[in-house]
Length: 196
Image (cartoon, rainbow, N blue to C red; front, top):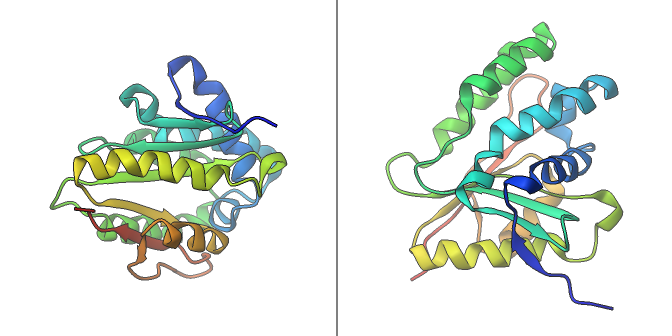
């Protein structure tokens, strides 16, 4: 049995990366709270994922584990999600009665995000559920965090699934607080201080 490899995902890998992300987030509590209808989820989430983390592909900071069975989309300092596109996708596809709650959660996420210093940001990481439990997420974290540490910078993420918090803690992330509004599931902002 071969050892899975981690490599940088390139522009021609975009569709494969977004497909793996879509499968990986199909049971995510926060995402499915926003998009509970299966048809709408499978149609809209790929666009949301691309707007949220797709910039990592152009930046050379998107990673594939084992040929795309798991994917991490890291945004380097200075790069942000495509907020205009995300806002439009959400306005067009999230139930109107949830929009205020979603907006409040997103505002709180932004408030936790370090804005006063250079920081790596992990908006999305996921594995195709057929390949869960094989350590691919840990491999992706270890690989990307080497680059973060070479830069001597902190790293930030929000965990929208409580099952993933222990993975992030094993890689040095610390819980900053909890974000929850109205009927929303909890989102956990986490920061990994710079390693010297």
